[in-house]
Length: 304
Image 1 (cartoon, rainbow, N blue to C red):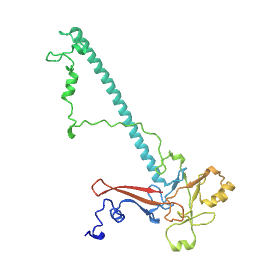
Image 2 (cartoon, helix red, strand yellow):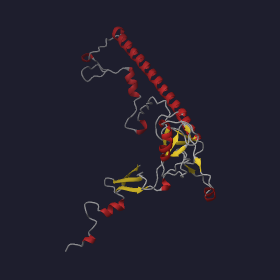
Image 3 (spheres, rainbow, N blue to C red):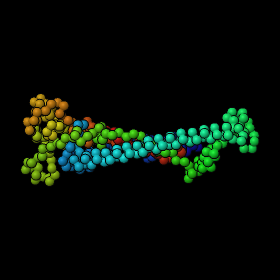
């Protein structure tokens, strides 16, 4: 009599759904919460509240000290790479000149042996003679340079004696880039921005943390709002007020400084943890089983 299915449920040729879940097989998704997202008033480098914020033309905001230190370190790294590339080119030129000199020396030595040697040396393979006096298709003529190379040749099958391939340094780019957007960035392209702080009595009594508002509609700025900064004066508005007043009147609401449409810069934000906002932020973790080991290889991915 065959056994019951409950006692024979683990001898299948494939994984069941429950077994896949226990092994973590497949793609696992998890919604990112509010605590996993960078606040709108946090620096993209130090992830702390802004101190003298500077914004690039793509809307990425940094602390002044953080972005200056980043650009300075990039310039130092570029100088180091340029020096390494120049040294490599000089070494390649010297090696090429040395190779030409050795080739000329070998040609002169062969010419001298051909004309002044006791036994003429033939370049034709039919007349090659080895050290034992034999000649033919299997005889090999080795020069002093090749004999020295054979004596000093490393054993490629031994890890300790494996020859090292020289690391080639490519010519680096001389432009500094934005650490967040990877586009070319110079110090002159950055402009300071100014947030309007909420100075109401209720906000002061409730919390010691600073909160910022839109200077036009007085709405508290959060990650749920799209922000726009003016690169002429640096004032920050919510996108609705910027499109409704600033873009129409061509003037800043706070300082009455004239501006144009190209002066409106959309401030990038870290996103939100709310499903109703439209930013589909979720973390993915893809696992597939190894061949015959029962262990999975992990390939994490972030979808924004």
